[in-house]
Amino acid sequence: MEVAQSFAIGLQALAESSVKEADRERKQLEEERKRHQLRHTQLEEGWEQLAEERRQFEKEKARSRRRCLAERSESVPLPNISEEYIGTELDLQLNQPNASCTINGYQYAVLPPRPMDDCKPGSDMFDQMVRLPRGWEVLSSTVDGFETVMLELALKPWGCWTVCVRNGRGGFDSYRTPLSNTGGLPGTRHEVDMDWLADVDSSGMKFKFTGFSGRLVIRRAGLWPPPPELPRHALTPFGEPDITD
Image (cartoon, rainbow, N blue to C red; front, side, top):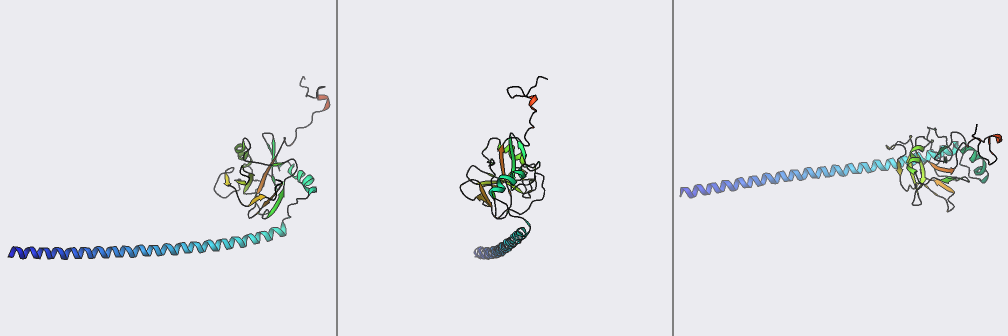
């Protein structure tokens, strides 16, 4: 009888211990659930705060752009795309000593013209159009030796954060200059198929910048400045330089 009673008491104690253990685990799980719920609520509040900050940033960005456009419209003359300008004045600007460089037999410059060493990037090309001068072409990323050309061009700031070229898909890519503040090295690609530069029509001669300001890289075959002409007495009867002296 005593053995049975002791056994019953043991079972009861074990059952009570199990109940207490289960109750303790239940409380722990409930506390863990509350902590997770609190964390989830905090994360949701954090995301909402970030979203609100992003909305405020976009609003300020739009206001800043409008102010920039207003200031530019008051102080910066609009790019001239008339026939007279394209054929005369623009060509003179592109042929200034510091407005272009020669790489592998091609003369390179940017539109609108800017000195190679200009270190003051501007916002003058928001919603503006440029026109390709006669005899020039837009640099394409598909030409032979493009990477070498771009790395050499990007050694100069050209007065902008990025320079733009045509890609093989009919769009445009942009590449960093030394003035870029996006973290990449000069000459590395910044954007692919960017949406802020596009052809105006199918002529391949007119281009419009929208939403951002940059420069379009152009080139033409030939050395610049051109080599000086030899005096006539230095030429053979066949028109070749006389190097017999």
